[in-house]
Length: 360
Ligand code: NAD
Image (cartoon, rainbow, N blue to C red; front, side, top):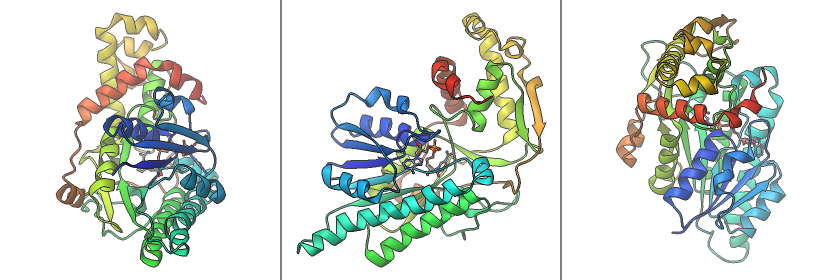
């Protein structure tokens, strides 16, 4: 069936990568992006699809239920893929309000509009509810933190969110689940591990390290740097969501992850080494980034600077994606080696994208 997607948060990091991926692999479908263009949203992330006849961008807030209803009618949307969120844990600690508003109230607003347009109105008109899917994009952070030897998070791991960000995402997951059980909305939820790749906002670890090496600035590492995350290349997340939408069972959660656990400090050292190698073998890079003097000298790691840890910092996340693998045939296609190489190449080639976004 041809799909018309409403992609919320499609101008953000994962949303934009998802839109590119979807339009490439499903060229007959239509995609409408609804995005409020907060500090994390960037219309330039969608530049290469802007002129397509089957793509439309709407500047607006997911909390505006009337607008969402209007879009569902106007474009005859049959699939919502819900990325829009406040997503940065540090910001959730200093200012949780926006997280409660967008992540909880915004998700509620989308659910309310979907139920009305897809279920209630058709029924009032004596019709069956229209065929639809509400796919909710969530995170592994809702499961809390793991000890070094604990088994990885499964879909039946109890929720234990520790930050205002993860608590707001957990609340939204519960609302999505409740709209399925109570009202029969056709929902699926995916819980994914840490993503990396093109268009990643440079306040996050991997792009920040790349940008700081290129500008010869300190590489800030929280605490002892031993926080472990499970990293997945962003296009592999997009493929996972596509599989869940096309083959996943309604009402189910699916974990998506890379079986790729790394301590933060080891990732930083890896990126430094890759950048040192790149500069050593490419004199053009030295010309383009004259400030990258440590990389040019082969000693980027000397920029590492330990800073006070984030309060309540979770130690370890790891995803067990067995269910998604066995039921849907999901497997990441990028290794960390190839994914990091692609990511580094993208940031080296797109300085005009990331430079204006840097705060320091
Ligand atoms: P992001 O911060 O890069 O992008 C969020 C997007 O949502 C931005 O374009 C922003 O403008 C938009 N937005 C924010 N508030 C809005 C509102 N009220 N109405 C409409 N649009 C609004 O986030 P991301 O890293 O791309 O994450 C996308 C989703 O994936 C989030 O739901 C996040 O919880 C989830 N997730 C992220 C990761 C990760 O590693 N980044 C991992 C797992 C899950």
